[in-house]
Amino acid sequence: MADSDRHPFLQGLSNHRGAPPTVVVIFGASGDLTARKLIPAVYNLACDNLLPADFFLVGYGRTPMPHDAFRKLAADAIREFSRRELDDAEWERVARHTSYVAGGYDDPEAFGRLATHIDDLEKQLGRGMQALFYVSTPPSVFAPIVRGLGASGLAARHANDPLHSKVIIEKPFGRDLASAEALNQTVQSVFSERQVYRIDHYLGKETVQDLLVQRFANAIFEPLWNRNFIRSVQITVAEEVGVGTRGGYYEQAGALRDMIQNHTMQLVALTAMEPPVSLEAEAIRDEKVKLLRAIQPLELGPGGDVARAQYATGMIGGRPVPGYLEEHGIAADSKTETYAAIRLSINNWRWQGVPFYLRSGKRMARRVSEIAINFKRPPGTLFNDDDGRFDLAANTLSFQIQPDEGMSLVLNTKIPGLETRTQPVKMNFRYATTFGSNTPEAYERLVLDAMIGDGTLFIRGDEALASWRLYTPVLEAWAKAGREGMGTYAAGSWGPKCADEMLAAQGDAWRQP
Ligand code: BG6
Image (cartoon, rainbow, N blue to C red; front, side):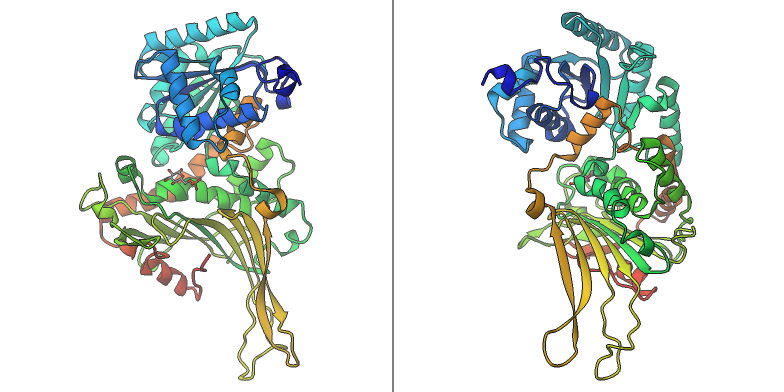
């Protein structure tokens, strides 16, 4: 088979899902996210023949380096982090269209050089390209980069045609309502909303995308998906890792900003939103915003809707690990929470009176993200046990977002035998069993969608603000309280007592995922 038949990437044969000729520029080219996620995503898209036929990659960063050094850095990143092994021939096709521009993030002259570089690539190609600017830097330079893209004219390249520039902005999108509003204003003074792709990588996960399919492509769920049948919803995003080497960042973030405000709230929105009128990006995002706006302000006093804690020393995988306050780069009197639990009340027709419990933490018993829909108990009259006590389990439908992706349904079943006794059993579906396990990573899908111009799996400006509006009073209250009210939990456990008490007050308990 001829080489060009086997792999049409950069051979002018492929134009998957209509992605036009594209140059992706990564700001923060020598950063951690670039190595771990972005370069491997580009490489795997290339291997799957999903990149546009004419594709260029440009790294941009402060450290001066020749093009070859950036290509080597990228190849090393693929070796270390890609889901596929590095294949030299495959990589060579991308590498020969990969280059590097050094410059500051607040440096008009350097942005001018970047613009000239992109013009040169276009001349080399002999046709226009869309530029996709991926802002993957520390948040302090998001706004200067966006302004630089505006002032240099890069944001307006090919305005009014399908090759109009786009920008992808990494999280965190602001650190509270005021800063997110300010960032939105800067972004919207340079780009129109249609050019902006705010990342929440949870939306790129296969299982998260499948939530909408499960809810709206199956007739059996929707009639039950409301306050008449559902008692509560629990969303857990638990991690086994601690802060590792990210102490500097994490001290400024904490679990509420790092996980709850964005990833966990996206899971809430997709679980609870009304059916959209279509699968168009705006239709879905409109429903998510409506849902976020229906959430009641949180009660912050004792016995209220929020709990926070830090991990103490404990055991992970049979090995002792230090507590948060002993970790590298963490203040001995740190006020940063590594765990947060929230009780949400959604005040709309569908959900009024159904608590949504959310929790996320580092150094928990194991890495697991799941959404559990707890149905109301069936009437117990027929299957009481000998003492007349009610002993049927409540049905629970759970979506395992990761790892071991799947869905489970707990049903009451008759134990075979001459007596009529019941036992809860679990029906399990696992994606890996049915579809195999070589699923694309979230960033592959998101980079591809941005190239194609599909914003469905990205956060709209008003969506980010709606979530910050809910959580900013919590952040302010916690900042004011300092360490007062901060719980602790042993590393390797399922979280602090204060979070257990929050549910116990409602007659509920956290499930063991
Ligand atoms: C990131 C957070 O957004 O998500 C990290 O900043 C966290 O602290 C990570 O570890 C979790 O992502 P995933 O895909 O591993 O669940």
